[in-house]
Image (cartoon, rainbow over all chains, first blue to last red; front, side, top):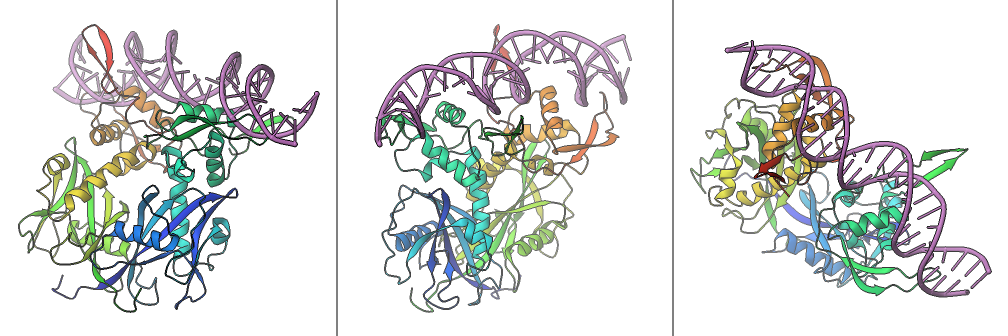
Length: 248
Length: 248
DNA sequence: ACAAAAGTGTTAAGATTACACCCATGG
DNA sequence: CCATGGGTGTAATCTTAACACTTTTGT
């Protein structure tokens, strides 16, 4: 290690802001207003400013891009990307943050000309060339990670509004995992998991059906036992005369 | 975002190299050979070199500090630390990597004067001032993360040599979690989990007891169902006349 | 009344726990 | 032969999966 010939990098944060919206997992993307990739789609993000730490930069960027104060949202550092040629402008290390949020309207982007908007993730993942830089890789990694976390944490609730029904929570799991879950068993499992959800006392309004109890997120962060993604609760499908699991 | 007034950082990788050794979770630390913190203890690591990506730097640093080729080891990026004042030398973003390895002798450090040596983690965690920089925080975060991962992944096997017995694997869990597990039930759970361990056909040598079957790590990475850290398999303790769980 | 969603009951199958007990080995 | 650790058997208990069925709402 020779003195003083250290390589220097710009450091950026990139935000993967996910929500469940219209029965699809969607992510916030911006249209780039400058080179490189002018006019292309990218994850929102930006460079660290003087004196800022990583978390502060992530919160600031989220506020700038979405107008949302991130106090109540789940924001968490995910991983860093540092390939020397990942950005044509030069050596840039990007620290990726994942934010999970309910399906809120985005109060239009701030000072930046580019506006953020929701996009279904499956379209972005299917074509790796749609997103600029290495953002396709970052998005894919982040979604894989989020999917894993749903099973043994209570994170799914951060996709829901402050008060929600068990069915809304089930829709989150079903959408993110792309499975169908058995409503009655799901209901029992969630309501019995200690500290996952707590009833508010109110009932949701209904459109053709019994009114559901409203819950808010409880204090628990870990879900035990886990909600298995591949084996249980998947609804059975009858083909011919015998039963088969939809996933097996 | 004003053009060209980007803040620039040096980028370092820090390695949290963990093993289970002498019935304790131990970590590789080095004695610092220069300022700052000259003579103090720190996690091994170093700055990125020209053209290197993050993973390459992590592998290079591990080889330099331990002489070990990291092909077979489990190395994984963990998280990044970027507080502006985390290093007195200036703005340095550190990308922390966790490596889990069996209890191998460290073939003495390479070109660097400082030698790496194993240290029990509990001593380092108990006194936050022993480690230089923010390495106490980094180590604590990494260990918490590793503990969580053991329950629903097959990572515990990466603490074992290429061929190992179920008891050795059990010792890993017991040591990292600080619990006692019921040997017979643990045996069944592990051997029945699909793809976790596969028998080599050989038997281990014994010192007073039946010779144990040797296994090597299987292809599975996720463990299902998970090994619960808090509730099950913990051995019961008899006090007075009735049973109590050691953890409950 | 009817459809549709919420939620409870029930039963068979499977997993977990605690512990008895047999097996193999070194001293 | 006996202490020690490896490993199987087993019964009580708990959890899960599947689905029938009741409750509550809007149309």
